[in-house]
Length: 211
Image 1 (cartoon, rainbow, N blue to C red):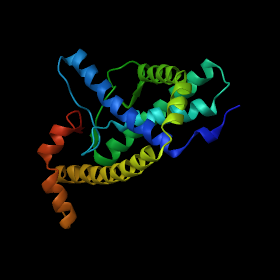
Image 2 (cartoon, helix red, strand yellow):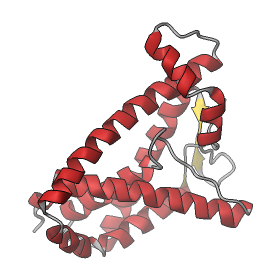
Image 3 (spheres, rainbow, N blue to C red):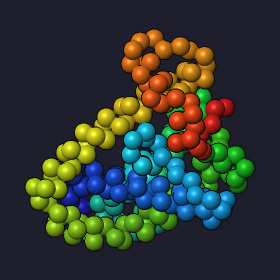
Image 4 (cartoon, one colour):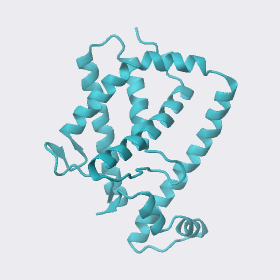
């Protein structure tokens, strides 16, 4: 029987942070193998985080708990669908909200608008299923770090992450608006334009491009 009490904010936060960092490593190694050079794929202006993987790890943990006792086929299908839906809407929002893309599966077999592909759907299912087998180990680790210092660190980093997300979102919006020729309307937007210029954004988000 699943126990939703295992799903706590500190646990999800650390999983999100760790998954986001692992995502940067995975993307970097993939570029190293495929293109023979390292690329750091991040989606925040301050921290080295690829949050799609962070959300993926959090989602995998939650559904592992909720699907406890279910068969591997059921888990595989759920993980594959959840990963695909998250990736699709991330790509959709990026294109229709900022007129940009950060990935494109248009050349892949059975893709949907280039946002998702059958290959990536399969990969999400495999990764989710593999992750479900280490959830008991993760629960054991978190039982050992339920201490005051870890709780304080969780709170401090949560605030910093929230600030990073807000500033990053504003920077992406202004990057898109500058591309459209829209001038800053207030002092905040002028500061954003100064601190996070086109050259900064192009260098930090090297895989992003305007459509």
